[in-house]
Image 1 (tube, rainbow, N blue to C red):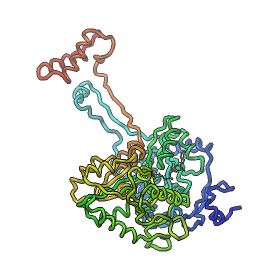
Image 2: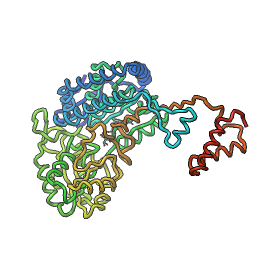
Image 3: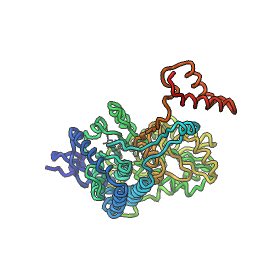
Image 4: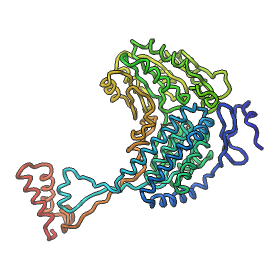
Amino acid sequence: MRIHPCLFYITKQLPHVNEKNTLISYNPITDEIVGEVPISRADEIPILIRNAKRSQKKWGAMERKQQLITLSKLLSICVSRTDEICETICRETGKPFSEALNTEILASLTTIDWCIDWLRRQPNTMEIHQGKLQMMIRYLGRSSYIRYRPLGVVAIISPFNFPLAIPFTQAVMSVTAGNAVILKPSSKTPISGHLIESLFLEAGFPPNLVKVISGPEIGEALTLSDVDRIIFTGSSETGRKVMASASQRLTPVTLELGGKDAMIVTEDADLKRAASGAVWGAFVNSGQVCAAVKRLIVHKDIYSYFLDLVLFETEKLKQGNSLLDPDVSIGAMIDKEAVQKMEEQVGKAVHEGGRVLIGGSAPKIPGSFFQPTIISELPPKATMWKTETFGPILLVTSYEDDDEAVRLANDSDFALTASVWTRNLERGKRMASSIRAGTVMINNVLYTYGLPATPWGGSGESGFGRTHGQWGMMELMEPHHIHVDKGNFPHDIWWFPYSSEGLELNRDMINGLFAHKGVSRLSSLLNVRKGFKDQTRR
Ligand code: TXE
């Protein structure tokens, strides 16, 4: 018997797992049931890995041309099912339809398109040029080349905030690199996650190449299982648990964790544009974005004027259900607990001296909403400067000179993305090059996640490793080095038995390559060549 969520609404606890052993997903605006997915058990994972490996072999055996056709089919299916996918995401997360379109579908399409181009261009093998040694290696009849081999089975564990774009782009890249994928989406957005498997199946990928499973114990069980890499996207706290579990089998991990991104606005910036960028960067997806603008650092000469611009832009934002009203810009947060966390964090910030300039509480509308909030005058040592606020809260402060702005931007354990706004691009690049973050944008925010050729990731509390771009691809393959020696010479001069002559020859090799010049260099190299050619063993 399923108890109507409204009953639980009163107790503010919606049951996500029921006696049918399914995971239920609720709409954070209406509390309606969006759907439910079966719960997998941890002991099923070894079978899933076995099926995935079988499917990976089938995928690997496919002609590249056929693989490209299948990826193109995936792209066109995503286009044709755009509205269905966006509506599912909106109902599951409460985010505005425009965001589902731009930050979820578009980011996925650009990534598939990039993967098709990458796979088309990817050579089967690449010869390694030996630099200074190239001539000697060639003379000795030797060569080295690399074949990139897929890792095998990649486990993807993903968060609720971009329930399609994050796991889907990681899965497409993993599969393009030749891997199979077992995806565990957030328990808060399982329906969007399970959609991903249906897209791959409909496009004609082998069954089990991308398998989506859900369940409260599956995340941890995956990190302890015999997969070949884990791509984890989530909080820094959970990221530590994932890394600890993965260490038991030495499973490589890519950790895409939290953020506390800084936005520096100089006095010569295009202030109107910067204000729009700051407001979108801070409050998109109701601020539930790892790379959202969280710390606005404004030059003192324009601080009040710029703050007025930002407040003016923020006041215009409409909050509500975009499926009923397309003019809505700020959707809901993922659940009531998230709203409660925001209330607590704002309360603490005010207690520590912060001043709420706008927002600061949940609006009087049904659903898990929190008003876009801007806090000023928060003392530098206050908690909110240091901790992740995964919601629509923006801190603002001022600075005197560029060095202080960069110091303030770097005064965080997180280092995911940041931005510098200035009309003087040289000044912007100079400041950007000193900011500790995986990506620093000049005069823009956040959107490079949708530029698949660029790397995504950070350092410190934001994790390590990269997804997207060539850098992301390199983490999904193993560079397999093959060295070929035609055996033109009877022995190598560094082989046994060692002798005084052999020692001299090795000295000649060092001198010939690196120490001597001119004639003495040549004579050393000629001795080495003679040594290699010498038919007798010493
Ligand atoms: O994360 P959680 P959420 C970060 C963002 C924020 C967090 C929000 O900064 O910190 O994600 O997402 C599963 N072993 N990013 O609340 O709670 C859990 O079921 C294995 C950064 O979802 O950490 C879910 O599927 N898995 C990112 C996933 O981990 C476990 C961009 C994440 O859950 C687990 C977007 C365990 N022990 C959000 N416990 C970036 N840097 O790009 C839970 N999970």
